[in-house]
Each structure stands twice: as structure tokens, then as C-alpha cells.
Length: 282
Image (cartoon, rainbow, N blue to C red; front, top):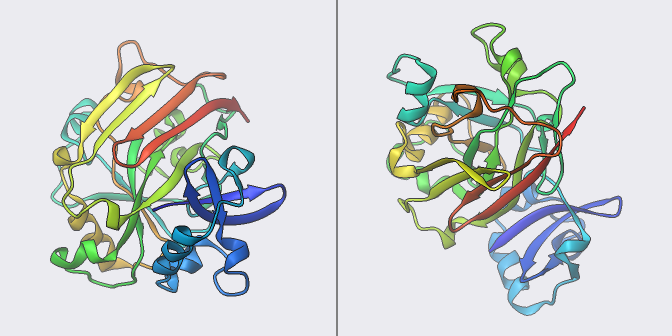
């Protein structure tokens, strides 16, 4: 099942993708589950699946404006240096524990929306990643039980403002400029992607492949990341875990390749879909 968050005119809602259409769950579940995070919190994905089998789409997918899959996450955990080729290209030391930093919801856009290069920067970079959406709450989750807490998967472009990222050893400014990251187009529910499935990740800039890897190459696999992050904070439904980018980022190329106004960036995860955004200027 593919689930999206969207705007229909000025009305925020969410729903199930049915072919080229959308079943509006915000209307069907009015007063009970106002958004996708609330649906996950109520463990009500099965109710959405039942409706999707019996109800028609309410309008074409092309008629709505897609939002980040979870527009209002309580937490967005981002993992740095989680592919060895990316660690090597950054010339950073190997660590025994995951590198974790946080993003804020305001730093994201949905599929089809422009990622904004801030006027303060000339070093706006792409980072294709796989996003894991949490569906079941937990604290100190054992790795052996981690998959039970996954609601689904999506694509993520962790647009990075490198000159601001390099101001200090702390990543936060360069990773949180307004509307620089992208999250979408939808969440594919975990029942469609069995645990331990090897997923392929590819990033393309104006049609040219810039990054290509799969999850078998992660330094810290998804269960390890869930166990680690849930140790210092409880995980909640709707939390997002952005699992790291492989080698090939623009800043480490010779010469460097940074995003320019009008560029198109695609992040594709097999079994999930393609996240596509153009680049604008803020």
C-alpha cells in the first residue's frame, strides 16, 4: 500500500494511492485520524487497506500537491557516514557508533516541489537516501525486534548546504535550511517489503547517475540504527529515520558539482518509487 500526504487546494489531507488516483482518508476518517501520523499512532493501517480494496479514488493523483510523507514528524533522525564509500570520500575516521544528527520538518518539501538553494550559499548539494518511517512506539528496542517497529519506507533527498555545514563540526545549520530537503513521493507499507530486503538506491542529476548503492553496503544496518536511536529517545509512530547517503555527493567530486536553479534531481529506491524535485532559489 502506498500512502501520501497532500494538499487538495488549501485543504491538507492524506490517502492511499490507487493507480493514478488517490483515496482521501482524511475525509473517510474525519474526526478519528486527522493525518497519516495519527493513523500510524492508532495502528490503523489495516483499516486503510480495507477501504482501499472497496472504495474508488476520489481524484487524480496529478490533481493534488504532494507534501512530505509525514508533514509533522516529532523527530527526524539523520545518519551520517553510513556507507563506507561516502566515509572514505569525506576522509572522516570510522566510528564504532552511528553518527546521528536531527532535521526539522520545515527543512523538507514533498515530491514535485522545488528544493530551495538559499541565497546565502553557493554549495547546495544532493544526498539520496532511504527513509524508514516508524509505526510502533518503543524505547531501547532490541535489534532482533527492530523490524516490528517499521511502518514503511520512502525516498529522501537530504539537500545539504555545504558551506554552512562546514562552519563548524556541528552539522545542524547546513542540514536545516528552509525547504532544502525532500521526502516522498509516498510511503510503501512494510508488508510489501519484507524485513532484510536489499533495497537499491540511485540518485540522478539531470538524468545522469551520481550515486548508486544498496542497503547491503550500509555500515550500520537499519535494525542497528533503530536500536541505537531508541536508546536515547523513545521512538514514536511517524518518526523518520533517514539512513545515510552513499558515495558520489557533489561536494566530493572533481570538480565539485553543486545544484543550480532549474536542475532536476531524482532519488529512486527500488520497490518504493522515484522522488523528483527541481531546484529553486530562496
